[in-house]
Length: 345
Ligand code: ACO
Image (cartoon, rainbow, N blue to C red):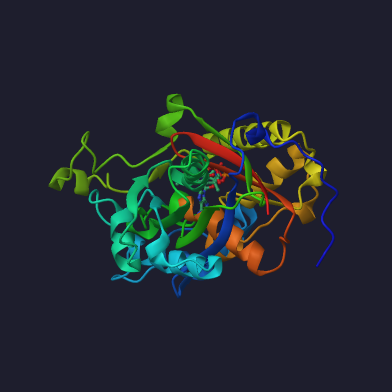
């Protein structure tokens, strides 16, 4: 086992009267569909090049769900892997939270479909919509339920079938996104390691930077809305980029400040996997060494709410994170929304 960075930190939760409760991540899991879409294949769909996509984003390929494979299927597969690693049965789960912007249907909640697929009969289940930031929002909500003694075992899932809302004629967006799911089991483990703090933030003033105009109450589906291509994601990439760097940096700083730690004490920074240049800019502003940053976006692109959940699972599985390490998750998405979390693994 590699040595942990020396870490003395303050646990912000200790301020509250939470004696005997700690919210630990006891298992993680992920699932990505088998089908790979390469940059070379995208060159045949839109006016782009492998070279442009790699230099401007760092993405080499992304995964696409099959026609009969939905967000709930991917979420259920990731969840079963996380439960297995945690040594927990589906029947023990008290609550399922699915973070997604691509639910199987507007309702019922995709979380209920996951509940049925994994057989978690006792669980309450709901969806959470905070775009790419959803997984950290989910971790914080799970933690609140656990610390308040409402629940002991919560399953948080980030799952997306973004290929279902991509305009495959829009080169500005279609090269960026992919499908997949990641999951974490959070449990009360007295005196154990766990989630130390989570920062969440939003800015509705910039809601128009990244959105899908059609399909909601403002613009229900109609022949006109389909013809106008309103049921696809739209993004102002440049402005989103600028806001992402600033918000991720600020949220990360705040989470470190709350724990009274320095970036050098963080073993692994797991940022939202949207764009290599965003990750590098945030890392640089935080003063992180390149080796501290976990990056897997070259394989998957941006999987929105699934992004840091998949990355966390890969970081654990590959041995990048060891017991006792401090890790920093930091995310950004439509809303705008953002967040950061410090975890003692
Ligand atoms: N291939 C070739 N050229 C392209 C492509 C492409 N795939 N896409 C855009 N271009 C062109 C543009 O048309 C533009 O050409 P023009 O100057 O003739 O108009 C040129 O490249 C430069 O475009 P920019 O937008 O300036 O490129 P930029 O360097 O900003 O990169 C990108 C674009 C990759 C989209 C970047 O802005 C970005 O990553 N933004 C943030 C995305 C993000 O973080 N999303 C997170 C949230 S996602 C969620 O919540 C679901």
